[in-house]
Length: 424
Ligand SMILES: Cc1cc2nc3c(=O)[nH]c(=O)nc-3n(C[C@H](O)[C@H](O)[C@H](O)COP(=O)(O)OP(=O)(O)OC[C@H]3O[C@@H](n4cnc5c(N)ncnc54)[C@H](O)[C@@H]3O)c2cc1C
Image (cartoon, rainbow, N blue to C red; front, side, top):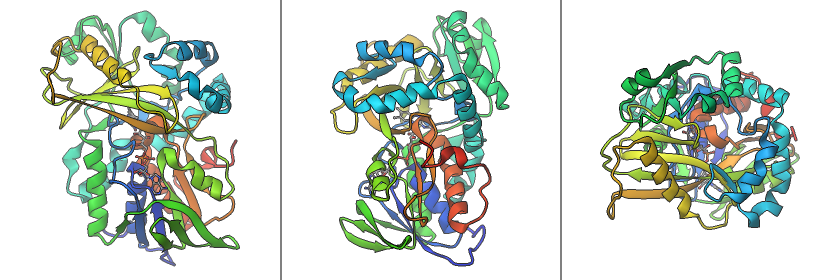
């Protein structure tokens, strides 16, 4: 890839974490002429970036905590299979985060959050395009739109504020009803009577391959990947000299923390106590489905997305608060399959061995639905880029551009103040 701009002083930049955010950021920094090393202990793109729904949608500006969230918390605790559930055993640890989450959902709060997310999610398809094209895999992303479906007008009306936030932020959508909707998406059940199409939205047909192919291009262009787990920073007087890892010290004069849900301890090492937790999500993937939608579909009542992937039909979503250590509750994945059959009556009532795979991943989530993008307090050479919650795939490329701007000391293309690590 040709350099976009050669910085006055190329630096050795260490990117910690090889998910969508880390890989996109590494690619933009390499483009800027830096020496870039990506530190990742596992497989590239195998964290949350592996099993998501693949949606690249500017319409995702609507935050998770909306007015009225407080009244819903008891239901989150009582229904282990609900769209959002909290494990009782995790409640004491989650409580401070949960209070912030509830407080973030005021009318003024959600308007400010949607406004902040807008430029980060702006035309997410086009933001990824140069990276994917350069990797020679343009077919991995498509722009077929994103459809939200409802079982009744009352359900649709309950999301009115979300549509107002989208309207306020210039996001186009088109409402369809009954026969028009069923002709547009023939695979869905006739029990779904309202649909909202976001025509600007894109999607990937394989999020893991998307991240891996951009990482392969990064390697071809001279970037390096080191298999190691970062544990801290070597810095003196605010000047970074390297990253401490289980494979020894990796010299670096700048660094980006992009470890997704695992970023909090590293920020703490630099004196920043960021309220990062995880919203665990699940997917089931039917390798050879009898039917499939033409584009990603959000079942807006059940809060899951079904996406036609190159590997099959994926049903992904829901939120479970149980931390990073508790084992998966696979009943939630099974429940996604039940919901999938409700949305697509053409799916078989049972599947034999080997046709369905399931997955659980850790969304890196901040209580105000905004990621952390900004410099660390103790060492300005370290930039944070984590906490992207439900929109980390869609916003990874624009995050990478913003981080490259920070490291080059160029003014970023949009205001990063709402994403400040010190905002809490
Ligand atoms: C079910 C589900 C559906 C979703 N659907 C969508 C969607 O449709 N669209 C969308 O935009 N987003 C979606 N998301 C959210 C999206 O997947 C995440 O926001 C995004 O993947 C986060 O990317 P990341 O690079 O920050 O983290 P990750 O992909 O988790 O990558 C972090 C990496 O850091 C590494 N790491 C951890 N600790 C260390 C360390 N100490 N040193 C070095 N490396 C370390 C990990 O091994 C990992 O590879 C979904 C998430 C889920 C769970």
